[in-house]
Image (cartoon, rainbow, N blue to C red; front, side, top):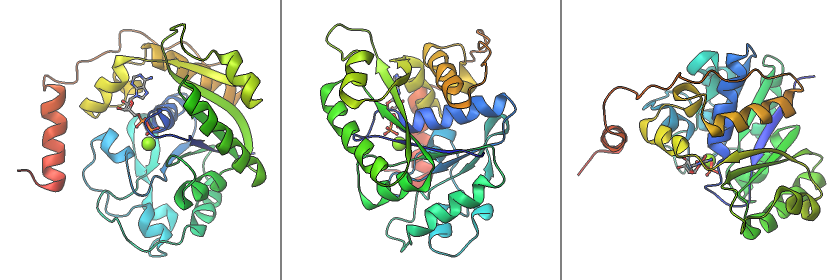
Amino acid sequence: MVPSIVFASGKGGVGKTSIALNLGILLAKLGKRVVVVDADLDMAAISIMLGVELNPITLQNVLAGENSVTDAVYDGPNGLFYIPSSLHEEGKSVDLTRLREAVSKLELSYEYVLVDSPPGLSAEARAAITSAQELVIVSTPDPAALIDSLKIRKFAEKNGVNVIGIALNRATGDKTEMKPQDLTNVLGLPVVAILPEDVEVRRSASMQVPVEVRNPGCGFCKGLRVLAGALTHDQIPESKAGAFSSGGGDSFFSRIGAFFKKLFGGK
Ligand SMILES: Nc1ncnc2c1ncn2[C@@H]1O[C@H](COP(=O)(O)OP(=O)(O)O)[C@@H](O)[C@H]1O
Ligand SMILES: [Mg+2]
């Protein structure tokens, strides 16, 4: 069977894109044929995280019926494939029902199709959640995120998407945080991985080099290996520490600043 897995959450900023992209890179490193689909149509993020300014054909073109999904596949790091959303085409008229068709087509030629959903339950998020066979809810360890996760779970179950469990991200271990057991008790779902709050994730986003490329020995990447093991049922080898590279001397912010200036013009 070829699983398509969507990463969804109630709130934004909980780490869906960071998890989907870096998990994709990890699985690709392990020799799997993986494609990550940026289904956050309004807030495209995968190409930003990869530092790619222009992808001529995007998911918007596919959903508008202008291109086949295979036209929108690009090579990412370490053998990963990805389908970007457009950074420029807000307001393009798209047919969201085409997303499920696109994902089903990808299921035929990839071992894993990882779908990065927008937050909440907007029409776009609903389309993303129902485009995949399985769902991982990404949550931070706070009560508000938990209530939202419950809504996502209910929506997915009503629509026949198998909910695998929760990836608990940005955990600090502070005693005020919700514990994995609390989440399981309330949501009735297993916590399949705990990913710590890790400054390396933010640094990598600023440098536009995914953390699994830059620093696969970091704490977040260790959590990713647990998640990969839970999703694939494979033994995932430890990451090699020491792969850290500073990424070439530019300061984080000068680099991403220059990127946005090129994209949108700068004042
Ligand atoms: N475990 C983590 N530790 C530290 N920062 C994180 C972690 N996960 C995500 N982030 C940061 O939080 C922000 C939102 O992450 P992102 O993956 O874009 O979330 P989402 O896709 O859910 O909106 C980004 O700046 C990212 O670098
Ligand atoms: Mg995102």
